[in-house]
Image (cartoon, rainbow, N blue to C red; front, side, top):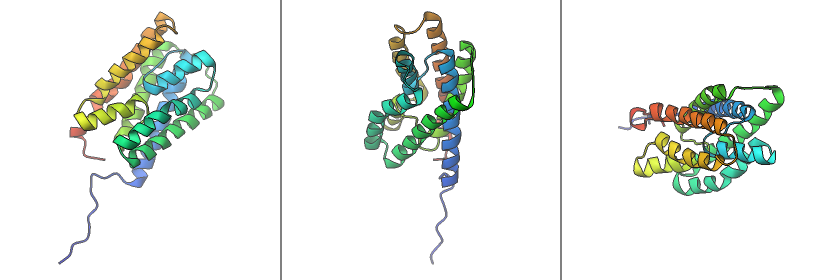
Amino acid sequence: MTYPLVPDPTEHSLLEDIYALLTGSTLIAIGMVLMKVSGIVTAGVAGLALLVSYQTGWPVGLLFFALNLPFLMLGAFTLGREFVVKTALAILLVLTLVQVMQAATEIRHVHPAFAALAGGTVIGMGILALVRHNCGVGGSNIVALWLQKSRGWNVGRLGLLFDALILAVAATEIPLAKLGWSLLSVVAINGILIAYHRPERYLGR
């Protein structure tokens, strides 16, 4: 007797993956725009992109994409093709959405405290939406996810370590007060991942 194949109840559907990509990328883009207006630096490649953008005037979305290319190559060898394809799509979505938001809205002032807490929180929730669907946002996030998969290390704590290095570089480029707000944004982002990204408690994939 043969039995019909039953779909794995823990496997995300294509529609769920698409919705997660759209939701996560939108949240990350909103956070990046808030931080760009306030003049603070944030986590990961997004933080590097903001830092270079302040110094050169180049579009932050384009820098975000370019800086992610070498990390995507790493992801292809360590996390698989599906992860890299989803991550590349997420990066392109963030790139596009940042440009659209900057063109469609006129935000003249955002207090750094609000940008750090609100912007950091929405970026953290955006990253959480992506990583739960086998997707990342590039940069140090790919390295952290690889180390989680291979060593069992916590993504949020690794993120704090990597982001501290980025802020150490930024310390020579931005005022001390904004550096403090930038540190708060890093805590907000990685706090979300430390609290809510617990693979042993989440069955979906």
